[in-house]
Length: 492
Ligand code: EPU
Image 1 (cartoon, rainbow, N blue to C red):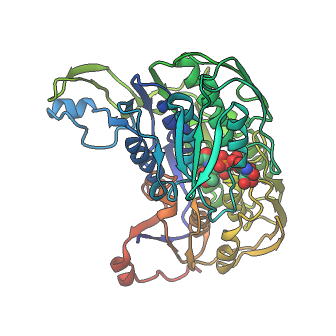
Image 2: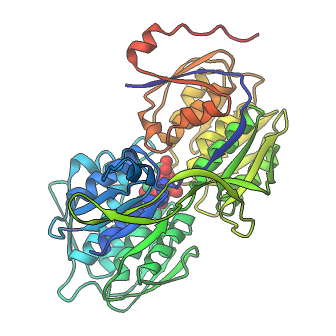
Image 3: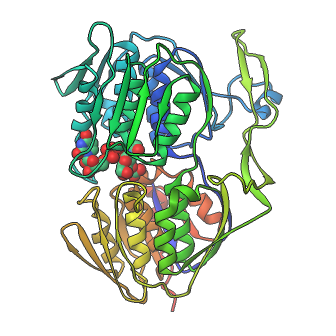
C-alpha cells in the first residue's frame, strides 16, 4: 500500500494543466452502451475509477481500446505504449448485461450503466452498490426514474434487475428530487434511458451539474434530442437509435478547485490551463471572499493537442485511428469560456468565511474537505455546512491530528483558524479527504505521512508528480521505503 511523505512549508509556483473530468468521463463511458457504433472519448484521465469502468464495460461486451499515438505509430506499435487519453469504445456483444458485485463494490459509478443497458438491451442486472465512506448513498431515485419510464425493477441476491416492457421504455414526466436535492448519476441514468424511449420524457428537479451538460452534449452529437441540460428541467424526445461520436471530456472542475486551494494554502502563485471557470462560479466566489485572487492569463496555454489524425492498418487488418495526444503550448482561446488559463495567488493571511455545500451551481461537496484544510489557516472562525452528504467529515479527526481546531455539530463544522499546522501521520479515508490532507501537509511544518492514498488515485492523476513540478516536496513510497524514511525536523 502506497503512502505520501510530504515535507511542508514550500510555496507552489508554476504552471499545470487541468485534466479531463473523472465525474464527467464515467457516465460518458457508460453512455457508450447506448450504441453498437464506435465512440471516441478524448482527454480521459488515467485513474483507478476509469480503469474499473473500462473493466466493467469489457464485461458488458464493450471493447475499449487506447488509441495509439503517432509516437507509437513511428515505433511501429499497433497497440499504444501508454495511456493516451483517447479511448475508442464499441459494443461488440450486447447479450452481456450483468454488472457484478466485484466491480460495483469498487466503484459506485457502475450504477450509471443501468439506464443505458436497460434502454438499449431491454435488460440489466447490476449489483446494488453499498454505502461508502462519505455516507449511505441510496439509489432509490435512479430506480424511481427508470420505473416511471416503464421498467419493471426487482431485487434478487443483492442485484437490481431491470426489464423494459414489451415495446420498450416509454417517455414520461419524472420527478427526481430527493431529501438532499437532485441526483447527478440518477439524472444521467434517466437521461440516457430516455434517449431511446418512445415519446417525450421530462425530468423535473434534474441535476444541473456541468457533467450533465457534457453528457447531454455527447448524446446530442450521437443523434439524441435533449434540451435544457444544465437547468432543473430536461426534456428528451426519444429516437430509435444513436450513432458514433468523437467527444472531448470536459475539464475537471474539482481538480481545478483543488489546485486553486493548493496555491492558496501554500501562499503560492500558480497558473492553471484548461481551467473550467464557468463551472466553478461558487468555488471562486467563496475563495475570493477568503482572499484568493484569480487573474485570466492571455497568450499561451498548455493543452492536449490531437495533432495530425491518420489511420493505418493494424496487425489484425483493421484500420486504427492514430492520434497525437501530446501536451503542447498553443494560443489560449479567450472565446472559449470553459477552457480558460487562470493565475491563482492569495493574500498572505486568509479571511474566515461561511460556506454551505449545495447542488450545482452552489459550492460543491467534492471541494468541502479541501476548503476545510484551507480555512484551518484563516485569520478567524469559519463555518462549513455539508448539505449533500451530511456525514462527509472523516477528514475532521485527521486534520485535528495536525493541530487544526475543528468542532463538529451535526452537518456543520466550526473551523477556528490557527497560525500553523504541524506534520503528522494521517489516514486518508476517501478521495477528497485525501486531497484535503495533502493540502494540509503541504502547508504544515515538518513531515506529514498520508496513508492509504489509493483513495486519491481514484480521482487525481499523478497528483504527486504534478505538485512536485510546482515545487512541493511530496514522495510516493511503498511500505518498505516508508520504514526507511527519516522524518525531516520541523521548520522553526
Ligand atoms: N441520493 C438519494 N437517492 C438516490 C441518489 C442520491 O437519496 O437515489 C442522495 C445522496 O445520498 C446524496 C444526494 O442525493 O445525499 C446527492 O447524491 P448524487 O446522487 O447526486 O451523487 P452521485 O451522483 O452518486 C456524484 C459524484 C460524487 C459527488 C456527487 C454530488 C460521480 C461519479 N460522483 O455522485 O463525486 O459528490 O455527485 O455532487 O459523478 C467524488 O468525486 O469524490 C464524488 C463522491
